[in-house]
Image (cartoon, rainbow, N blue to C red; front, side, top):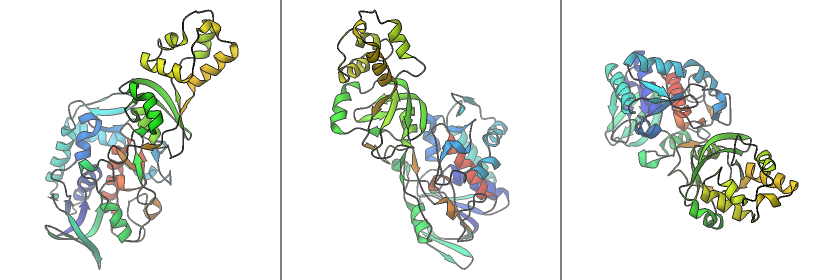
Length: 389
């Protein structure tokens, strides 16, 4: 089969690229080894698809080159994607902090993308495994278990290593290496953090306990939910912190954001109540008890000295814990690292070394924070490549 454009990957970036390229009257085929398209879209936002965020900016992304994403994000914005949904009558709502979700289910967006690709004549070859590829003159030749495909443009939209159960593979990185492109270090992102066995035993009774906290790690600050698991910590604030956490780092947890605990203890310095009892009026009871035991505080507030009040308050607002690892790519929502952005044009996503070869979406070293930023990068980078492939 000979086309103008071959796209490897039927995820968000690949589908957007196909729509834009086909809209320019380019003949397009999407190849994917999975049975159905858009698996990550389908599960995003708990099945309601957190498809973008109203507050998208380059500061919401992690990359070796923090400026690389600016061009694509500026040329296809959240408002542009919202306009598509408005035209299709797909209803959505803002959940919190600019996060936009489908009012019904993610199937609304998948159906819209499928209808657009069909309207524009995009061909699909699903359940198709790539066996070999090469550049033959001006064309890319892709050999698969369903035969050969040729095109003058090849777009790699294969995603990262996260969520292997949804079909992720290392194909995109293999292609990059085959063409001599550099890849930055790959690691799990937006992923729960784990404790060593000793610390895990200390908190095992807290599994399932959740609360709102503020977390700091390597200059990053995140406010949101934190959940104790049987192996460590999860929840939105922890997932956000995982983008910045490195092995050997501690994270700092403010257990009472927005509360001046030192002022509270000072105002109640005559109270005969046990500290654990007082703390449990702010925190889940099991956590208040466990934290008090770890700090070895076994006396009532009225026996605290001024210095002890300062010290304990500081610890409540600056509780340091050192995770030892993450739960890995199996539980990660995204992959940190990827195709080195110095290998690509920030305007077109085309490689600098090989004309006609493009990389888009998660396979690139651009990773968004939690809250719709990664799907927006998929739309924006797919659009950018689709305008030129």
